[in-house]
Image (cartoon, rainbow, N blue to C red; front, top):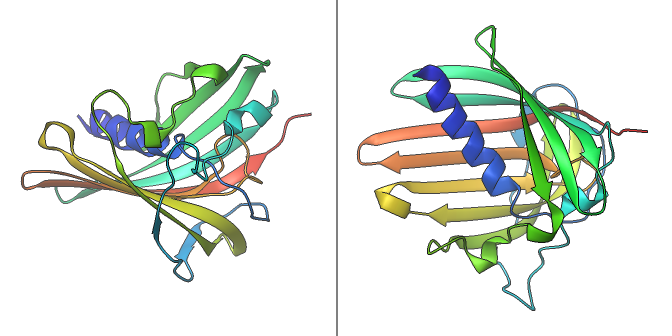
Length: 207
């Protein structure tokens, strides 16, 4: 049950963050997050033809690129912590294969692989199926592990099947893969609330 809740929280984090990528930051990450340092101005995200969404960030991926995040999940009065490592195992002009390992409460989940089709990359402003998210975005400098990052943040809100999910993601192109520096997600279903905060703790580039 706990692993199920963890899978849902982390899947939500990665799915929302993978949808958008922005430019303009600097620095490497390591150590625990200290959280946002100052706010950015919010504005609606542009749509097709006027969107700030850039090309698929995974198109820059090289074999050996990796990122590590720590996620704190709170639900039903209980907190869980997990560490996720994602690494590029294969890459060409058409697709990228990502290997993911997750460790939670001293237990390791079975590793998994995901093949990302670069041509079919999902853009949130186009919606996914019949669910179209509300999107806002802005720019903000945040500090993680004592280092500052100039990021673009994106806030998305969806409410399929009565489950309202709000996720705010800070991204930087100097971070490999999808560039996630930090993400905060809240999901509400009736009186049930699940919160997850995912923070970058390490990253590196392949040769």
